Length: 240
Image (cartoon, rainbow, N blue to C red; front, side, top):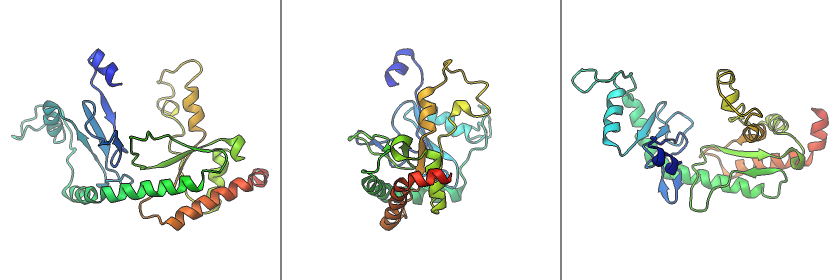
């Protein structure tokens, strides 16, 4: 993407919504492209209540963003740009600053929990994970697995329903994909066959519980529930 942007003179903007705690080649996210945009909503590793943060090394863009967040005010109550009220309240700023202090410990704990769950499920057929390069570090804001119905014995939806019956809350965060949302379905242009890989993946991925205050025993119970569901998949399928 960087090479394409440089070749054509296109500003490269990174959606780093889940990026706090992640690293690329040993460097924390935030210094790539023209700018990177982080989310600080309640589910992120650095929550501020709501809102987000933009990082950039472009002084002109930084100045424009500073003005845009307060109606376009240049500091003299003179509107030089058509902006909005995007100022971060003081209480949210305090929460964000304390969250930044906790970020290394929270990110490390989530990586530890994710590694534990993956190890406990490594012999479970039909469950796979997104690959993370050895030189990179995932934030594990979410932990999403892909379910192969033929190997696991149940569809993604079947596993979701079975885990719900076990008292485990999960999410289908990526389904439906953006081009199938009600608003975009009639506006987004795709190939005649659709986005087959995207659509196949979206129907098979499930986000499992993962939060920094989880205990090791919580992870063990989650893994045990998934393995139990796999073991009794034929019976569960008949009941569904």
